[in-house]
Image (cartoon, rainbow, N blue to C red):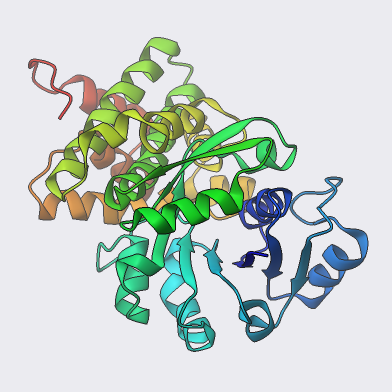
Length: 334
């Protein structure tokens, strides 16, 4: 039997653990709080993040990383992207040589501008054949309720992607393989930034035309950045690009979208943070995404505007005015 250790007992870590278990994989969730692990083991639910949703029998929980990783085929990482490096310091020495690291994280590291797979490779020394990512339109609550969803499972090694595909292919979750790790990761990271902008537009009551424009031009920004760093532009037309972008920009279940809505309605960043409560990846990653773009000479006006609102004190209507005042030009996808 395939065995997976899932690090992170929040919404997405638990939901993906459920997917793996539904597909026949033995799953051990690893968290920090003994009381939550006990609730998962005895009540077969995650009362803090997914209350009322029955977890499969093949899923258990622990606070012991060594126990979770013993014999694991996959080490699934579902922690906030900006904490990955410090977490790997504790976990990496326990990972067996055959174990494949799987990133569920959608962010770019502050300071280094590294994608999560790059952080894993640098910190652990794992080669590309031991690293995979999962990215797509995967709102955790819908997946936990076993509503139909699809995603990309990407690895530079097609065999690894196929192994992961088999491990998480359940009746309600359809994974497609891809070898474009760069494109899948950047699609997930940039969509969080565009989701903040789309949420602001919704919060300001700007209408569907404005949101449709942000989604389309946001996709162009993601594609331009991806091509500049070596991604396949076609990846951004797929599940890890357009699919994830549409789901994030249109759903009240998206933390990034709802954070933007609160900002558009006039709340401060601190007040929006208090409302959303959980980690909103785009809030921090918007700076590193923009820094990565500037490093490669890529123009990303929407990302620039989001950074202005979230980190530089600009008002959302200033963001709108700046975007609308840009010089007219021909449409280019990248």
